[in-house]
Length: 67
Image (cartoon, rainbow, N blue to C red; front, top):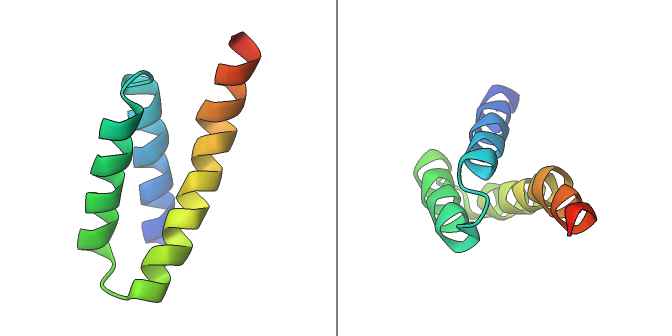
């Protein structure tokens, strides 16, 4: 399970750096990806929260600092 979360984190960060301006498109893709990977709703919600946190750390903070 941890390996899958790691893969999702890597993919998320990669997408963040590839499409920094297309936030909604990126989040939509991530949500679809997670829905395919996880069938359990509770796991899905927890994973989405973790990915949102990762997104804030890797995308939100540098973005706010630069602007």
